[in-house]
Amino acid sequence: MNPYLQAKFIVSAEKLSQCPDFQLNEFPLLGRSNVGKSSFINALANNKKLAKTSNTPGKTRLINFFNFSDKFIIADLPGYGYAKVSKEAQNRWQKYLEEYLLKRNQIKSLIQFIDGRHDIQKNDFQMREWVEAYNLPIFTIVTKIDYVPKSKVLSVIKNIEKQLKGEVYPFSAVDNRYNEAILTRLMSE
Image 1 (cartoon, rainbow, N blue to C red):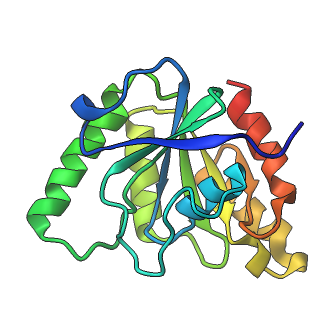
Image 2: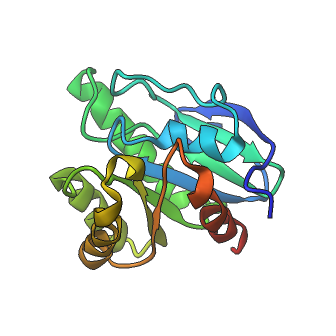
């Protein structure tokens, strides 16, 4: 299988009523700011400029939709855990994102991103508890795995599997050997 698909940015939306109408499986990306969601999109598309990456957390403020070869849609969501915005803006985001996650019929599975260099954070667990409370389908991608010493990669993955339960896939934005397993998972729905 080709480890890349043609991908294009479709549109940004603030809330459910603004989301595009299409009949492809959709995978929203959940994760802390700067966990590597945009780098993930760019790596799968083999296009470093498709999704904007930044060293400044909290840059993604809208739901950004990307079409991967008319096979599936990736929805890049604002990161949780960091944003230099008012409480009012954060509350509005939370309301809009909850509505999107709970009522969007195209969503096949959520994907939670965990930084492989660190322990799972409190807000990662809180997000997972929220997802499980609504019984939403989810799997995990462990990012920045290339920063983890090779001898520890397996134990990092096993630890995350144990703590979060369910499927866990390693990912590196610089080493594409993990892409095929992830693409197979996305296209098997």
